[in-house]
Length: 471
Image (cartoon, rainbow, N blue to C red; front, top):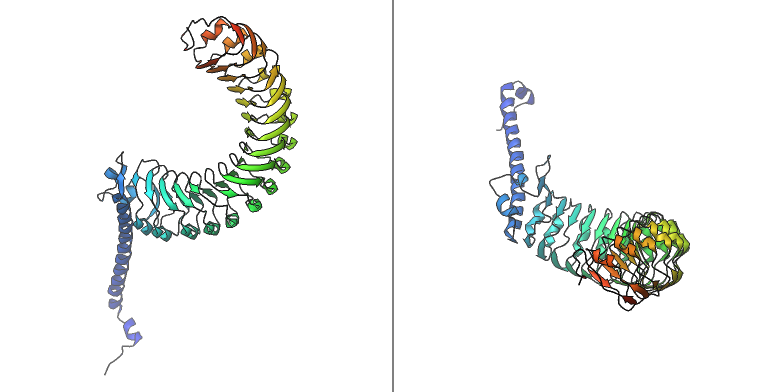
């Protein structure tokens, strides 16, 4: 018959308790220690599996450094957490590596940061990566991955950055990306993606950066884009979008960059563009936009680059353009703009590039260009400009390219052209210039392109220093 010992009796035997507790603690510590080292061994195995699929490591980053004789946490590109001693980040960017992604990478269960951009990884992405539920940052950009963008990207509920730009992805943008409620940056540019922008994407209300440039996307730009109220950069250039620029874009008041260039957009530039007071770069060139440049453009006083060229814009260059005193680039070429170059252009003293070519501008080159002392590129060609080349052109000491061809300019080439010692291109073709070619042109030793033909000039270029145009 079994006899049970009363608890009170056990309490009377203190010598029994310490060995029991000691054994229990030792066993627990052993389990923890074993788990710790078996976990880091799993991480080591996963990384070695990735290393085994690297077929080209020209700088021997992994070949010499990823060795079992050293701690995983000391390997190049590897970061471990101090608490769990597990791999939390892997950065192999810009190492010129070639290879494929191992399915065992999905065993790095503590991984939150994975950056392998600017290498030559190829093939498809293994579904085992879905095990990386802590993932916040994924950058696979500038590689050679192919196939469709996996639907399972939508399972990374903590993801903040997804960069797949400059690869060979095909198919459509998966609607599952709309599940990424914490996504702040999405970069899919430079692939071969087709279809439209899925409406589910506009559920990602934390987006600050959206770049879909240089794909084959089509359809209209959805009006639902207004949901992305935190957006700072919108890059939809070099696609096949058509229709009007949605007026709802005016609600995105945090926008700093808009790139809609190289599409088939039509209609007028919406007046709501004037609401975007934080805008620094506006690229609308190479579309089919019509109408006049809206006066509200003068509200965008933070603009640094304004590209409206290669459209069907008409009317005069508005005087409010003079408000944009932060402009570095003004590109209005290849439209049907008329009237004179406004004097307010002289307010743009930070301007580095001014392109007004291929319009129907008349009048003289304004003397206020003397103020544009930072100008490096000046193109006024293919207009109906008259009068002489102003002497103040000699003030533009930083000028590298001067295009005045196909106008109705008269008089002589001014001697002050010799002040432009950085000049690389001088194109005065097909005007009504007269007199002798000034000898000072021979002193422009940086000059690489010179076209003075189809004028009524005489003489030859005399050389004092080396120039490829000296005879």
